[in-house]
Amino acid sequence: MERLTKYKSTPNSMFPYKLIDDGANTELDVIHKLGQIEDIEEDLGIDLITLFKALQYGIYGKSGNIVYPYNVLLVEKKLHAYPLDIWDESWDLVDYGKTWALTKEELI
Image 1 (cartoon, rainbow, N blue to C red):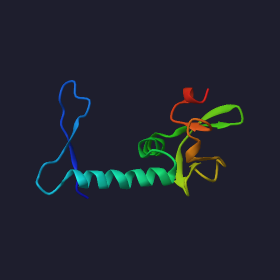
Image 2 (tube, rainbow, N blue to C red; image 1 turned 30 degrees about the vertical axis):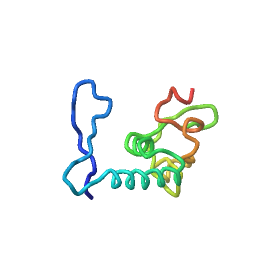
Image 3 (spheres, rainbow, N blue to C red; image 1 turned 90 degrees about the vertical axis):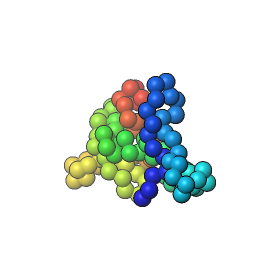
């Protein structure tokens, strides 16, 4: 998979990524790629950055009125606590901020 952007570190830059100008990529390629990413996010009901942070670092989930930390895996648009044989908890992706979050403070 070829990147359409590259990281260009500049002081005070609000947009550190720059379109790779090798003559092969165009702004239309970037728009097409972004459109595909947005289609995936729309289908899942959550942005991919939040989803990948949840999968990589874990989440906090509500169980009743108590908030617990969980490691999770993704199964059919639901985050499931694992190991599955110990925990029987799952959260819908679209319920971010309601029943699960990346930080405990977001649920308190």
